[in-house]
Image (cartoon, rainbow, N blue to C red; front, side, top):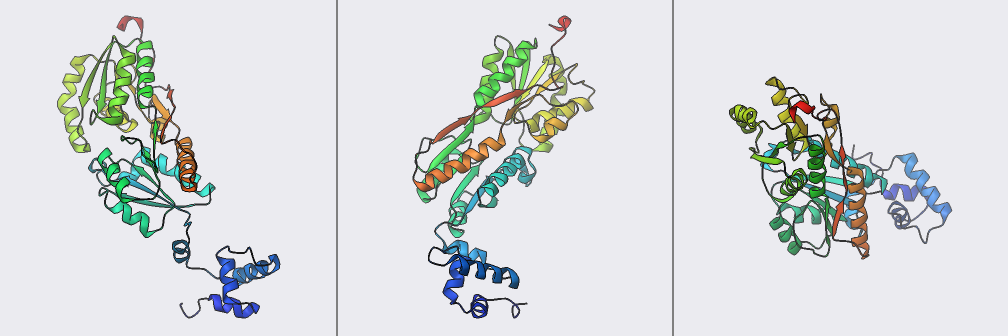
Length: 341
């Protein structure tokens, strides 16, 4: 197979050109080459099926056109981070935007922050997009990397060459709480696996809008088997709480708890109503379809790439960006009948 591989020298010999001229056409350096010569070279490349070593070409250039996306493979994903609905939606939107802009997408999952600088430098990346790491991780990266990067939902002080691209976490929770209150609910249960950062903001917003109604909080286990056991052990407690609406900080948790309740014979939305956050594809396909807070993955991806391009060119770019979210009302919620108020 190696013996039949077409070389730059073969193309040059066939056209009576220098190898430097053919190489310059392949690498896009055609400013000093006539249009006719460029066309001849391109036609010969196509005819012979020449395939350049793209990795070598990209690494040799100052502008590799590679955008890296790194996700924290947190233990709560149990080795299935790329199956998560929010992650899939984000990657799909980023892939589309990166392709539209003529870049290459490279994905990495890791729980070790120390791997990121090596990953970025090894592939001479134009920029990075990071998801799911904590504040101390980003602080460490700032001191170890010169490459510009965008963070999805970071919590850290403003810094040059780093953009914190978030959504209106508090506002989304507020919309959910306001809607639940409008429907006539007086007692709610909030579900999250922690009470920090974006989950805290979402629940704080819900509570603020839901007042003077009572919004309780269950900190559920991060691992699926432990959550199932938790729900089983606390099911009677849940019934005795008489909460008529549940607000989960993610669609994943909302849909999981909804399925658990349905297996137990609890009707959704007749007995209990559910509100999620993110508007992943599964929220639209569930029965009943899930009321949730929609975040625009496409808008976020477009903003991320725009910021990376601005930082690379030295243009001004906001380092703290908050994108809007919207309440999407579906069948898992409805106005309470008067007799239950």
